[in-house]
Length: 267
Image 1 (cartoon, rainbow, N blue to C red):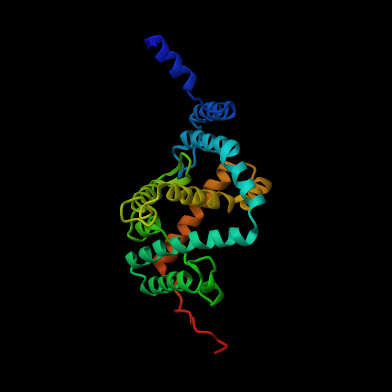
Image 2: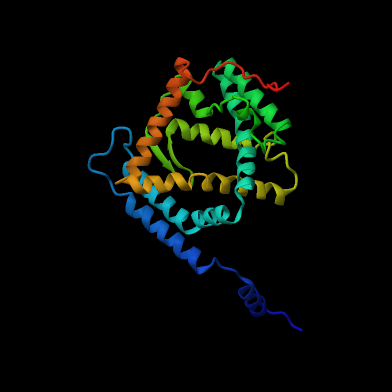
């Protein structure tokens, strides 16, 4: 049989694949929302000088989330038993605590460092790899911390508010910190990249993102009920929380606490 260029082209055409129609329409709608939202805002918030661009990216994120991510997260909540979801969330929180411990050390908060390190070790052993949050059961509170807070403690200003594609609310400082943390997590020394089985590694990454999205579904309902302008509400809440976290770390706040007693009280 003679193979011609036409035969190759026809075979390639028959084997070509395209995105599902619903996905393509969602992406088109998201792109349109992005362009429409990039119009300038007459009187932008002083903390949000790029509000026009940010609203466009926010609209893009909302469109993609509503068409793809949110329905999957709702299905995950509906089909996965609550104990299994709690176990999965605890495991990812335990991994996050390890990064919080590093940031407490970088901030010079040695009590918080040892407290959080104790949480990680205790949950990783007695808590079956973090599935059970036995540290909290024994009185150890989780201390929220990240590299963005560390940069704030070091005196770096937050900079303007910015909405990141797919990641959502941030500031210039937090965006740089998030990128640094992301690269570290996916470096050759990161815990995720240490998993050599690519399908397993990708599945864990997907489950992490799914768990994070499913965890804010209830909060999203609350925002929808009380917010007249979702964009402004989310921006103001984010900026206030980040400011409070940095100030608490600078002043000692209520994040420093005595090391908990992990011994069994019934012994």
